[in-house]
Image 1 (cartoon, rainbow, N blue to C red):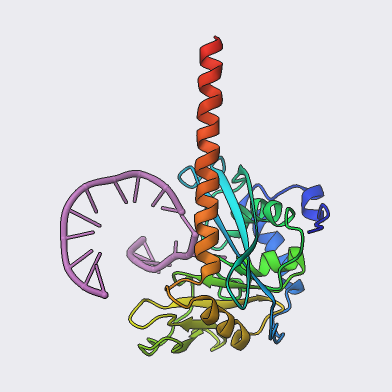
Image 2: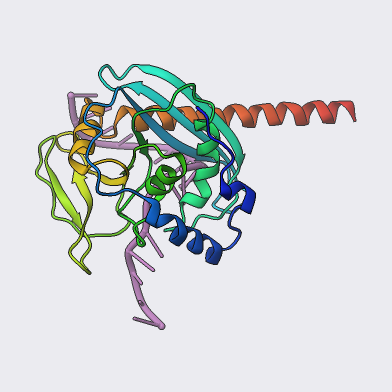
Length: 249
DNA sequence: GCGACAG
DNA sequence: ATCTTGTCGC
């Protein structure tokens, strides 16, 4: 999947909270949040990141993207990438920590997925520009956030059945930020929000279809396992190299 | 000042 | 996210 070096790469990655906030403000207007569809995506991609450290900018991170056939949920393609976190974990600036390694993994795909499902929020963000929006603007692909917990907004408790849902609303202005969806009877709901070039109704259908059995959609489950495995494999390789160096000393 | 706070 | 023992349930 062709992803040329973006302006971000040439300008350097934000090093401070202030620079990151400025970058969010610069990119935010580029997100397309009023789109419909994609109605019938052929492929759905799940993205996730695993960490080695405790939240600092030096942590080792592994990103993964898993492309599934939207109809059968069979794996079509996978890719991973490993590198430094490059930014500390700060709620609201999450993307600056995960985007670099996710872009690196996406660049290894042979074809662009029809919809990227990110592990985090999109519009449901303090400044309306979560990880899913950020990744959408940078790749140009349809993206959405599928988060396990709330970041902002309030909502009623969704009904108990699979498919039941409630609006996630910004108390300040009444704006609908996303949707709280029950993917299985009797389990905690997940938080959906638009990222770029997708509609909330279509997103809800796709996530429900991708979660036939568990709380989280297969996209998220597959990506979660893949990035975890990639990080563990890298850790073992590093240990092996260190052992060899010690032996030769 | 006191909580809340994606992963 | 990651660190971690046991435990309740299908």
